[in-house]
Image 1 (spheres, one colour):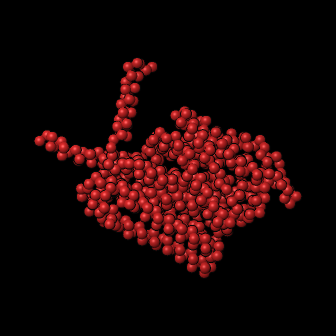
Image 2: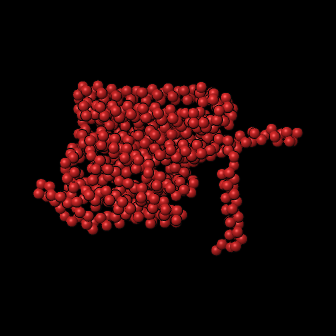
Image 3: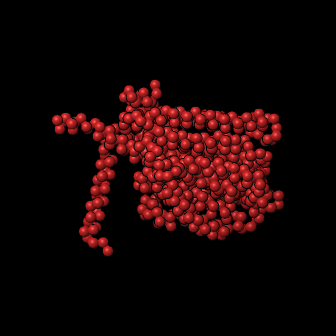
Length: 266
Length: 265
């Protein structure tokens, strides 16, 4: 049974296994991807990842690179398509306060998994990237640590942040509706993720031109830090949805009190 | 100068605001409960850890990765600056939203966990460097003091002025305890070096060029001379600057955007 049906049947939208299911399932799936990529690198980085001209590298890493880009692209296309197609029909429907709360819970679930993705791309993989590139001589931009970090978790964070906005845009129009304009919170969050791609290109360009060795604190790495700073927009998303929850509660109380007042007046 | 009626009016307004907040807190809610707090604090761990770690990795990473890079000249300066930025941002967010003087400690605990996961799985398990060569520093004791300062002074200006200097000293002094054994002198190929320098020679980092290898001559400076005190003073000044970069992040990138929209795209 979907959480929409469960809420319609009277279940509390804030139940751990009702609305919050999205958070647990999505974080579980992302962690499964992370474990898979870590084990893959652990098994093949030293045996197949040192010489980019070898057949073993093409087999284990170029296929992984294309596989990652295609799977993230396919996921984004399918998810966005579903969000927009179903969301347009939902815009004109009136919804109960419980359903609105469920939608805020789902949005928090998507933001939660975005947070996890940001940790994986900004802390978990950069640690291996530092260790790998200070030890191994690079002969390609598509190194064993770059492939999971730059070409799976970086695009995944963009996809998740943009998906969270699309979810809010069609399902929580009172907060993120078109007529209100584009929220600064998501602007910062999405801008951070997009900026990261520009920095990936600049980083590879810099390493190929004037500093092929690894010095982690080198100035042309610094723009990566801005991503972490702009991701603070996530706190604004949490802040504005919390404020909206208070409005939903107020609205629900008004609806509950309405029959009593009407009866008293009658 | 404020007059008595204006002071009384301000006090009445403050009392009214407190009552309104108390009503908000004590009201019976259908869906707002502690679950939201739990989800917020737990899911925020990841973005906070990521932001704090990437800031440290890319501003001060090399000095933090290896024992032989933890020198008396640069390490106290760059580390103090890089590690205070995100704790300061969280200090603002938690103080503004909940009046919790815990933001810096929360951030540094998140950073501590992320650092150990990174060092253990990526540097030790995957790359086989020994943990006693690549252990990460801890900023938790310094963060507790920074939060205590904010709680006592209730002022970000005073916290930055005193906290910046204290941060540099605390980060250095608490991490000196695990570092000290690696600063002992030893003879290696007819030269006096520190144990940390010898680690740097034995564990080959092929991709770090010679000019980045921090082997110091057997002078007094190698074994913590007066240079470190000058470095700590400078580190404290930079930490004050870092604190206000963090305040900018907290104020204008996390809190200011709440409920604000770009009207024309």
